[in-house]
Image (cartoon, rainbow, N blue to C red; front, side, top):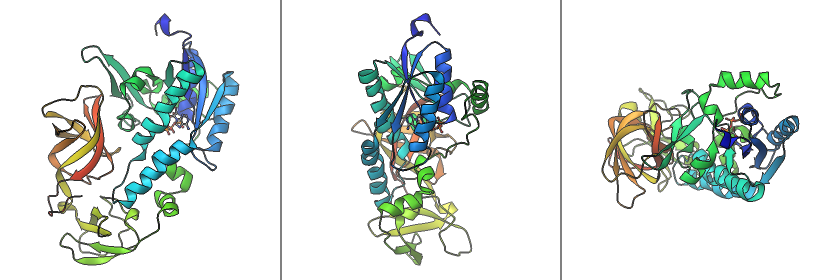
Length: 366
Ligand SMILES: Nc1ncnc2c1ncn2[C@@H]1O[C@H](COP(=O)(O)OP(=O)(O)OP(=O)(O)O)[C@@H](O)[C@H]1O
């Protein structure tokens, strides 16, 4: 760490968990003037809501730092709740986290840090790393050293302004080391259980329980690729592409959800061999570590948070922020609404939202 960064101000996003608490302690140890900021995201009780705020306040008291709570519930509601409800109703499976990071967490937090706290840096407990590439003149986003905890996938939509201002101290550590630090510093949250990947699930019990509050179930048909009716469903928002369990149809071979047809209120199922896709298009693309290419490039893509990165050719489409992904091998469970994020080695090049897939099995695209 250079002397220039000593004593500079950093606003640390505190959710009350072990990761963000340890982040605050580590930065304080490194000589930063640390300020705690908790974004009040959701109404109700729970770790993501009021309980998290109490844990964060306790930490700030222990560290002798100020704690600032920013009531951002309306922003969360309009960017995330509405986004999810609209997405599920139109037959996609939206990923809320990257949208939340961009529009609800990092953007507003950096603005608040600069304008209200006079801090030019923010930090979070995400497992990811950043770097500056002088050749490209861009900040890069890199995978965390702990590949198992790596959260860069959720951060692909951050812009250069944010990437230049953010610190991810945990990107260099694994989770066991983080807990060890937390214990060493005597943090009461050191052994707090891992939170769910999706905070809404934590708050509502399941995605279905959350959606049922907002979407009136509308029964419809479950069909095969030829349109033959195999059964009934109680609302397409209860299904996601790639799903096998809970379809409720007995067949000689396991059936998977391969498309959600919102127009006809149908769930389309097929056997696994007919559920792979050779390509898809991606919109709202954000190029992170490199400038938007003009010609196709080869990279590795992740089409879900927990899927492996697979080889792909990325073909820029007209208009700048859309691409076509042509997989080296057809992929299973390509899901409109989820993020596709492409990497070269540990460097995250860019990402966007899957909007359509090309169908190997039938002529209807998703
Ligand atoms: N409500 C919030 N207010 C401020 N910062 C937040 C909030 N929620 C999350 N963050 C920041 O984003 C990081 C990653 O959030 P995520 O929801 O993935 O939690 P996590 O990995 O369980 O972290 P933690 O253990 O700190 O809760 C957190 O470590 C924290 O720095």
